[in-house]
Image (cartoon, rainbow, N blue to C red):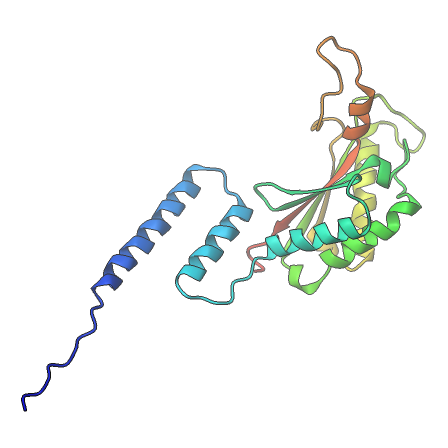
Length: 220
């Protein structure tokens, strides 16, 4: 009996698949090179690419952090006082003045302590050790002066420092923290309407502390 010819596995498709993956990678690199770098989107692209080539364990620390912080905020019923989002650099936490500080004060309100403790417990965990924190204090354009704080420059800086001190006391290394007083240089809402009249509710909303949580790629 003549031997049956051995069946040969057709692997020509591998070449086409490899070319397609390479083209996709080049496309994303090109898109990133002409646009503002967004670490959150980059994490999604990187994870998707790794999964497409068969890598099973893909970590998404930014996505994981946002999910945990969202649970913290919801469990503490703090949705009205803490806004969670992201920007091109990473995760953004925004704390309202109503939650954190009394008017003209840089002392954290007692009722804010449990909420901040819950958030700090998440942020100081080992899985987020490669993240740094840039903390901004914001005020409205309303003129303010006191014996302790001669202007909003000192007040906004002191409020950012108060949050930084709190995070350090909860276990986040000082070297990972940076503070800045913004005064009214980056309002979230206009302080005045089109006729130059003050909008009181917007002034209140502009008094806030913003925490930018950014991955340190050198440590990852």
